[in-house]
Length: 251
Length: 332
Image 1 (cartoon, rainbow over the protein chains, first blue to last red):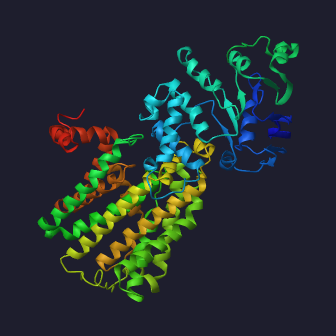
Image 2: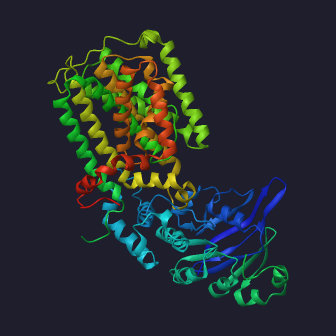
Image 3: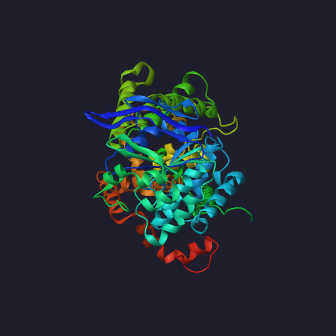
């Protein structure tokens, strides 16, 4: 199998606060790995370290064996480390088709093309349209993103990431705030992610975590608390203790 | 047609808009010979506004100092014609390169920071240039301006005449050419990635767009286009003066874009026509108070919203617009 993404003794301090404490984690290629933990456990900080929004105080990050600790966000994305956002980060004035086409063109290395209009690049446009249809966005791909219902924007959030054809995909709470009526489309999308894509899921929704993940890491106070196969973690009394008194199914 | 349809309806409208501008401009050549100098100003200000729209409307970079590039274009074209060569096109290329180099050099200042810091930094660069042009009077003529700019005929054929006919046609041609290129640019993958950065920089980075490189590139291009607009002014008026670099000019061009609208390129042209016309006629009627009316219009546009105003003005003619778009009946 081999390791897709790995961290070595990752630390991040904000002033006196240690948001990430000596996290060494290895995600296997093709994994369905979930990262859970109570609020304030440092999940967001860890995601930001992995994607390059933050630089670790100490420690190292490797993607497919290459050191990416100092690479900026866009270069990590180009190497196949792509994320979605807990709060939608979309291009409000553009359509889903334009949005996905921009990501596809960028991945193909055509992002600095100055002459041919993007919408007249058949290779980019056909792939983009196919991707959008595959993920339940075919009928709204010509509408302005800002005008889409929330559930559709949530789907677009994931589709953009897939357009970049990730090797490692970080899904940051994909069903956060999605009404029950729209959940099945998101869950279906997540379930249909290509097998060769390594997925790290950060989620509060335990139904989704237990149905999706084969392996779970539990983060508490910035440090890895428990790691193991889904069934083992579900039974682990320490994990139950951490979550005791917390609403397990929802944030 | 196979494959997806063009994504935005605006592109269809603006494709026609280019022809409408060309038609109106050509008719104006025949009908309004008295106004060649004014229409020449319109064309130049329109091009300057288009250059600002490239960064403001497409990349979301606000600037209160775009006159720096315009003014550098003015002085470069004037000095080049005076001391090196009188060919207009060659002069424009040199003006564009000079302004683009300044844009590239100062791009680092606008890559980071908020709108406010960008406003201050761009304003600062323009002020520095203004003071330089003022102090280097052996080169620029200082406060007296730079005179004695003599241009060779355009393409060696069309001499610049007293009525300003050649000047207007020359500026108009350059404007339409640059509009065409700009329209290609903003629809290209590069241009679309700018709009992605404008809408959400965080996400743009996350899909692999090198944000800083793209912003620096469009800032450089925009500066070059502003330099061409400035070059046109120097060449068609045979004069360069400090007001080309003045803060007023940076503020006016923002105003032009507020009047015409940002993010679709033709707003700069529409704004330039309205602004220059108002300037021309109002300052003839009420020389002291013409800015009062410009100010009033600005307040009304911002408060009432441009689209609502346009719709109110056009409502008696909507059936006509519908016809122009190839649909019958009033537009919704």
